[in-house]
Amino acid sequence: MDGENKNLYSAVQPTNNLTIGNYLGAIKNWVRLQNDYNCFYAIANMHAITVRQNPAELRQRTLALAALFIACGIDPEKCALYVQSTVPAHAELCWVLNTFTYVGEMNRMTQFKDKSAKHADNINMGLMDYPVLMAADILLFQAAVVPIGKDQTQHLEIARDIAQRFNNAYSPTFTVPEGVYLKAAANISDLLNPDKKMSKSAENPNGSIFLSDDRDTVIRKFKRAVTDSDGVVRYDPEKKPGVSNLLSIYSVFSDKSVADAEKEFCGRGYGEFKLAVAETVADKLAPIQAEQARLLKDKEYLDGVLLSGKNRAEYAAKKTLNKVYKKIGFYQIQS
Image 1 (cartoon, helix red, strand yellow):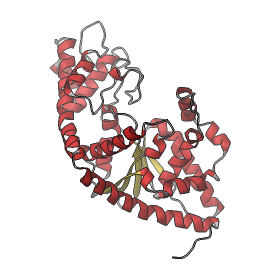
Image 2 (tube, one colour):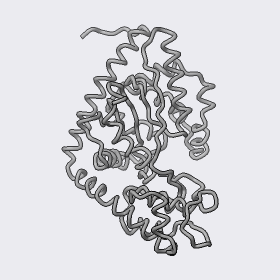
Image 3 (cartoon, rainbow, N blue to C red):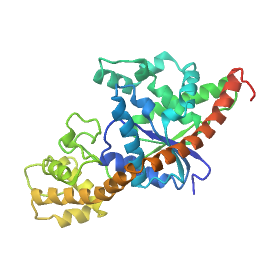
């Protein structure tokens, strides 16, 4: 195993429903990576509160996400699955790293600008400081590997810069992380606007297939998916982005090549094609949804999983934090 004995960190916010794009691009990769690395997988509820949350819904979504991860194949015996806020070292290290981060760096973060525009009524310091907390998340576990998408490159670079800055100021303390770009089995686009990536925070939810969507909802959304006027099922992302997106989705959920999918629907209409894609996706989601529902009925089990993950994460985090505190000169009482 290439990643044997290397730590890996990744996290997902419990804010909105995850899409099939998140499943293919992140969760399925997490399942694979847990066999190759020492994985720390967090439910990032501290990041979530940079946008106002309904407290009851945040708690519910946190538990639902834990159940979903397990239902998708995350094995709590192979990795540390935990809730970010249950390990206070995240916030503690973040404060230290703030003193090694420059205001100009934060002002240049493109995601801060994007989120500020979306949440103009609540441009808080947490929104600006988000990348430093993300750096703390990663460096806390001496993560050598961080799976990222292309939109997270800037955040990883900040984490690397902070780590190197601290290491140069004192002595080697943090592992400088490397990004591993996750390759989804397919690039999934919005069903109504195939020029955009399918998103869990899209303005129109009808363009996204959420992992929680029931069968009827999945079919309804696919029936409304944008195609074109020539009526030919052919893969051509430039000239036929809507049809090509549906072919990509069908291919990955049916375990067939795009070429085989094209042959299968040769001479068949878009209505029949869309229904086939919808039913194939719904069939794959059904067992995941059933297992998530079963797990949510067993709160004692889920709490046990999250407690075990928290203990494993806290053990690793404290080792790093104690080292950092010693390096910067914090007085520590010997117990």
